[in-house]
Length: 180
Image 1 (cartoon, rainbow, N blue to C red):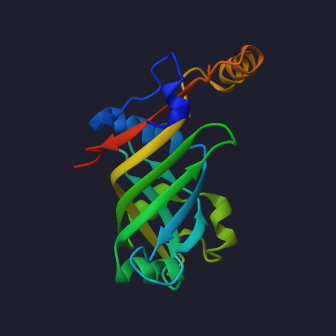
Image 2 (image 1 turned 45 degrees about the horizontal axis):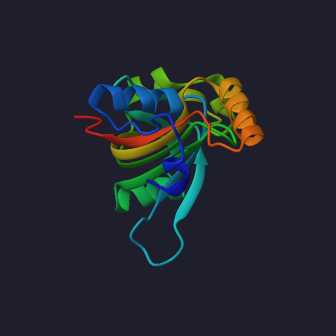
């Protein structure tokens, strides 16, 4: 616990396991910007790219679409270990996930994940032969959020600044035993 958290009167740390961890992943991944990181063990800079989560399952599994001739595809093919970072706003909805990724060309899953805007990248539509599915299974993670929404968090932060007391509405914790 850092010094700022030690000044907090409220409990602002809660580790989540299993179903609760999966629910938090679904909540924070569906509305946030995702940065997909590969080549975790290389000495060169990490490969980071923005990606859109198509769906997050109730068990915390995240689904993406990519091109089978892309760098992310070849990176995952070489090493299935990935890391995902999510940010929802400047003040809340942060999520960090260590995970494994699996590549498929499952036509039924492509149809399930397909959205018309994807034709921008897959010009032949959902039957484009370049489409690949990325299934990401989180192994562990950490989240930073607020307990009562951004408006309450803002008011508590302002009140804390006025009285000189740590009164933020933050909550953070480990995410463990996420998917089977």
